[in-house]
Length: 93
Image (cartoon, rainbow, N blue to C red; front, top):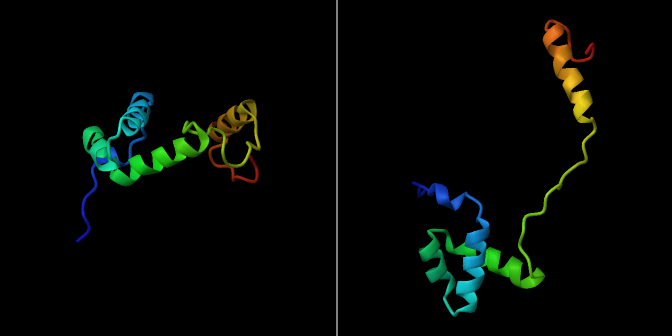
């Protein structure tokens, strides 16, 4: 039977926690000690440290994925049309 994971394993590091990881690691703490202090998985702490040490930063990159095909205004118009024409098909809208 698989082990249950705690919710903290799936949450992102806050800015404060990122700083703590870097500071504790530079202070000589092991990955296991840091993970125990923060209540996180050891591999998560190790991955963050490796990402930070390679690039000097480990902030999340925003905007990944495909660019938007419609504007906010067009999205609003489509939503309004779906409410008005609730029986219409997608192709008609």
